[in-house]
Length: 305
Image (tube, rainbow, N blue to C red):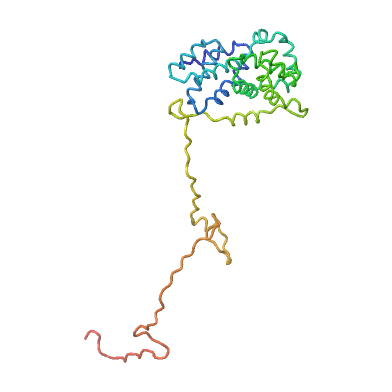
């Protein structure tokens, strides 16, 4: 994939603050990683992130992404629903005006600035991804657009509607049937449950990092993009005992009660003992106290004569 970093930075700087915040949130990468890790390689996921980011910054057209999927023989039925949701994570002022005109943008903005607890459910990537899970789990692709679904849940979180009226609101605003609305309302009420706790605080950066770490890592294998990776198991090696050295012996304080020569490992060294047979025989010519060897008499004869 051709990618010009300088053009990307220039387009980013010229974009609106809302667009910059969307790029900075890394929600595209986080969602693709959550849904496609283990099914696509990290290189392909990276390229998908770049294609979507370029489209948001008007550096490329949406059909460029389709061409990339087709050119690399990727499974479009697997990838396309995920990438489409990534585009819909980005809400513009025009989206709010068109899809939910009953509440003004100014009123929403004031509410988010006034209550950061409620604003967390609007801006946090973790929350948007959880809403996407509710949307996909209930298979609402053909029923309602994800942007409209995201806006309605956001308005409930901001307090414009009562949480207990969620089912009725879904029927009114999204035209869902009673059974579907009641089922989804249970998931939404569970999602917004922290707002009913007066002591609840939005999670900090550390907890957000834990959320990211809980997602499966990107696959770096060179296998087929659609083939799930197989984990490799390694046998656990036992610890190698430390070797006795002169340095360890010198470091050990000498003591009559010393029971080990391995000061580093602090373990007793094995002592090997072997037995030898007792010799009962007496060597010939060996002097004893009872029968000394007699001295030889002196002689004047020369030794060399």
